[in-house]
Length: 215
Image 1 (tube, rainbow, N blue to C red):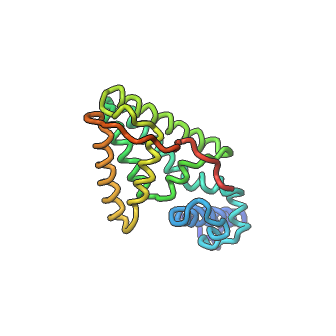
Image 2 (cartoon, rainbow, N blue to C red):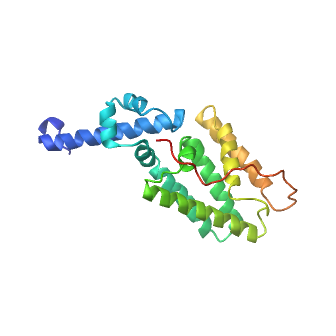
Image 3 (cartoon, rainbow, N blue to C red):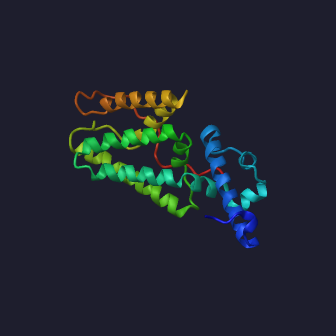
């Protein structure tokens, strides 16, 4: 059983207090990013966490460091989804599963998409994982095309269109958002099939290569 703060040595109590503040900041940031986007003021996150701005900056010296810490687990999960798709012996099934799971993650944590599509040059591990997920998804797309199941004009950057559309239906209650997302994804996966694919209008200038994060 952990010692009560009043029974701790000063240094031990300070460490416990620091850990508590860090957890509160991360929880507050996750909520703020989900509702207000990545450019929410750091002072607003500090207020939500019930700590001073100076305390926030001692734990996270930059917005970049806070964002990458908040979304590290989600990014790792996203990369794992792509790895699972690559491991599936059925390229089309792997492609569909990756789309379905990434869109479900987006609905569950609406701040993650913006974080995934933003570059954080100073966060080496985060950037490495994100780049691995992008390369992996491009290979998932290539394999599904090579199998003759995915329409030939689908581009990896079309994932941006899908995520933007999915974000649009991810409103209302959690249940409504999840139901709307699943139906949209089912519609789109049928449209992505190679069978009977017709010509499409030109693609917009979208890319999975992200802009630099706001500091």
